[in-house]
Amino acid sequence: MRVSKLFTKTSKNAPADEVAKNAQLLIRAGFINKEMAGVYTYLPLGKIVLDKIIQVIREEMDAVGGNEMSLTALQQKETWVASGRWNDEVMGVWFKTKLANGSEVGLAPTHEEPLTKIMKNFIHSYKDLPVYPYQFQIKFRNELRSKSGLMRGREFWMKDLYNFSRNREEHEIFYEQMVQAYNKVYERLGIGDITYKTFASGGSFSKYSHEFQTISDVGEDKIYVHEAKKIAINEEVYNDEVLADLGINKDDLVEKTAVEVGNIFTLGTKFSDALDLKFTDEDGKSKSVFMGSYGIGPSRIMGLLAEHFSDDKGLVWPENVAPYKIYLVRIGEGDVIACADGLYEELINKGIEVLYDDRDVHIGQKFNDSELIGIPYRVTVSDRMLAEGTFELVERKNGEKNLLTREQLLAKLV
Ligand code: ATP
Ligand code: MG
Image (cartoon, rainbow, N blue to C red; front, side):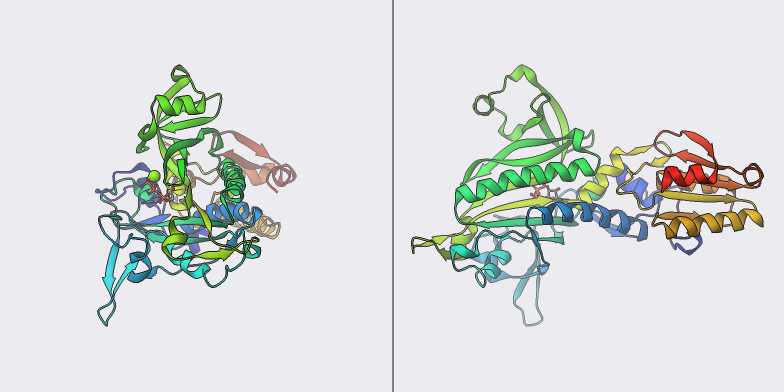
């Protein structure tokens, strides 16, 4: 992509009412646009990053046998009345509206009910189980407070996967597989070392649910971390009984603030009973399908990454989610342009993602923009370097500078 063709521009300031660092940086660098509190548009650069995060999650969900689909955002009331969750006192985050004929509909805050209903068309026998449908979808939640930028949206992206299994044993095998899949996701996104499987409150079918909590000063949750075991306990369930259950000594725990980047839950037969999703087992008996739910917030993760991987100059994207790998800068005319154009073409042809600053603006602006946008590598071509046959390579994350020949540069970046 040539910067001259990119319609977004960087800016010195974020909107005055934006208090979250992640949103301030992402707005200034042109990744997102603020529509209102908790509602953000993904601009071209932001869309690339969001898609890369989603792709990492997709690959890991497919690896455990997930079936990707896309449910509707508009929800009919009856489906949710069946589970009791249409009631605002049971689920307080609904956005509800009406069709032209007056019937009530809602914007999906989650998708257990409609998916369970759909699966009635496809699950009849034990031979149809287990199955793992999932989706990436915008969820709508009328959150009370929305001051954390992308980390708490009123409209936000979620990956939600649900398992439909024959019984608890089959469910539990998959649940463990998902713990491993989630670990891989956070590892690949560069936050594996600071993300903990965290014991949280369960429901009628399990004593605990598990959250994946990433340590961060701006987190809304308090957790107690056991570093050696690489697990944590959410303060909401932190008591002597849980410590005993986990065989953990209080003195080995450290209190931290953290961001919930994922949540996995044993649903049991709560929704299959409510919506009458049954199957005929091998013994000929009709039984309720045993379910679990597995959420990850790609947009919350994007906010968290912006918050975590940034410095006083701007964003510092990890390579596998950065919108581009290289920010190519040219300083000069004539031969410099020809050389930069040639390098750009060659890198593109080799499949490298390059943001080429081909604008006629001051060099300081090009460098500042490359730092604010947070592209991992900056390559500069100038008259002097051209005469010496070198290119300057600067690494965003540590500022390391090297003058390299074209061969050395390609060997390092391709
Ligand atoms: P929280 O406790 O933070 O309100 P939750 O427990 O309601 O979240 P789930 O319903 O389990 O969240 O949603 C699955 C995932 O979606 C969460 O782990 C989180 O990563 C993400 N998520 C939830 N709410 C939001 C939100 N308002 N904005 C952005 N991401 C969110
Ligand atoms: Mg939660």
